[in-house]
Length: 168
Image 1: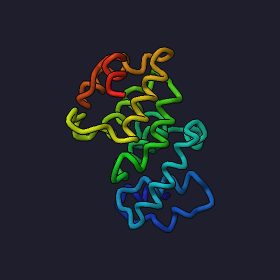
Image 2: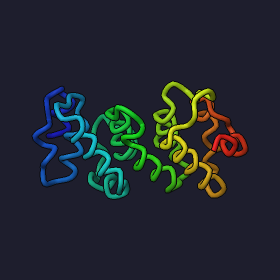
Image 3: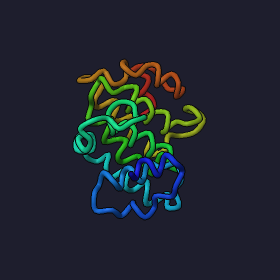
């Protein structure tokens, strides 16, 4: 019901305090948020344990693509006013690895960190540096840089390990 109310554009803020975490998250997914900070906090909390979040629904919810956590992440990135708001959770997702999640997790996270593209005339923000370091740390085991070449290119970043290392 919380998901349906959100899809219909209804304010779901009262459901952000529901005792069921799945209801809270579905309420936070709604496009109309009277309480953006609390909705974002609910989404980020769910992303701290993405495998549990994926298990809340035995069947995919109508209108959602892929694992439930992908929708939760997209919504969190959209709600965030800056990458710094989501950085700790985003960096943890990248650091966890998982080569098959490029287009649903790592790529959108990278573009969120560099929404206007990397500008070499400006120093990296701490959150951007942490994210790129997470890519470097997982690169040898998952190919996180080479497997994300399109996303690195879209963010205006070097497309190889040496190029990223030079930025850090």
